[in-house]
Amino acid sequence: MTEHLVTQFDTDLNEIRSKLLEMGGKVEKMIHDSMKALVERNTELAESTIEYDHEINRLEVEIDELCLEALVQRQPAARDLRFITMAMKIDTDLERIGDKCRNIAKRARELNELPPLKPYIDLPQMADLAAAMVNDALTAFVRWDDQLAYTVCHRDDEVNLLNEQIQGELLTFMIKDPGTITRAIKINAIARHLERIADHATNVAEMVIFMVKGKDVRHLGIDPK
Amino acid sequence: MTEHLVTQFDTDLNEIRSKLLEMGGKVEKMIHDSMKALVERNTELAESTIEYDHEINRLEVEIDELCLEALVQRQPAARDLRFITMAMKIDTDLERIGDKCRNIAKRARELNELPPLKPYIDLPQMADLAAAMVNDALTAFVRWDDQLAYTVCHRDDEVNLLNEQIQGELLTFMIKDPGTITRAIKINAIARHLERIADHATNVAEMVIFMVKGKDVRHLGIDPK
Image (cartoon, rainbow over all chains, first blue to last red; front, side, top):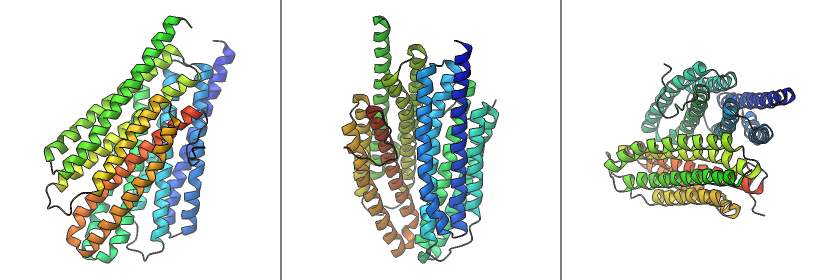
């Protein structure tokens, strides 16, 4: 392989890397905006967040094309091949996170039309945790940092715990006063979307561990040793 | 490329194809079994379905390895490259469907401990639709059949409609009698899992259209013309 080719391939990989980080940043923005739309009862922000999902979808398509192009042009082996095929899986996870944010924004739009049930405290906390997990999972990917990836996997339990807490609390509301059921179901759906966002981040983190370690730890239970 | 290599590569592609179909068949079995465990209140079947998910996870890992191997050894271009990278995305969708079936089986196990709320009619219908969508999406993939893939995308609306019907009905139950809330929430969760299984099948079908047409129709709205 000539020096020219190596350089060109590095440029390709850098472009994939930076597009993925761009996509990750935009997904994080969607998580925060959909939550802000809910907490501040800002329906305009809910609308623009729903609209913004197209941008995420466009980026998935773009990254896939970049990856296919790099595979055809460069025919990479081992490490780079793994990086590129993982990038193509990861952009799908990011796209699905975008879908979930769009759904949260839709529920926020509906809830903003109804009287508040209670102040939102746990949901924004869940959203912050999930967004940080997405950020760290992607950082771990571009830096080949399996240790950071492990911390993402472990934080998933925290999010699941918050989700269960919220579900229990909403159940109590509904049983005490059936007039709260419609709202409680929507809030419950939001908690579940956040929980699934954290699951996607965990999936990405598991792929990073696979990529770095070279052996597949997916579905086998995560153990950093 | 020598004749020997072409043949060997065909063998590789056939192996990926048949492993994916095997995985699809097993995922369909999980959809049917988790539903049977619910409808027939068969907790033993629920347990074995939860356990069976490991088999699906193992297949994802195996197919990914086959694909990476084929990419390294054969360095395919255009059509085959697209097939292999799509296979790596599709096995992730199948694996996530397995997760959803496991969750359905868990909810079935819990519901089997409680008095029946009502006979299950819509849920098995939803499950049959979703399983058929998974089957057709995979058939479309291995046969490069974009027309079949379009029919999968269109059937997603049917499943969404059934889901909304079920949700409306459960809401009525809950408002009339708060004693039904715990069970209704679990049944609701099952409906939502089935809806997401259909979403995964739709995602696969969209990828098939992308693969066959060579241009990306994902997220752009599906139009068979």
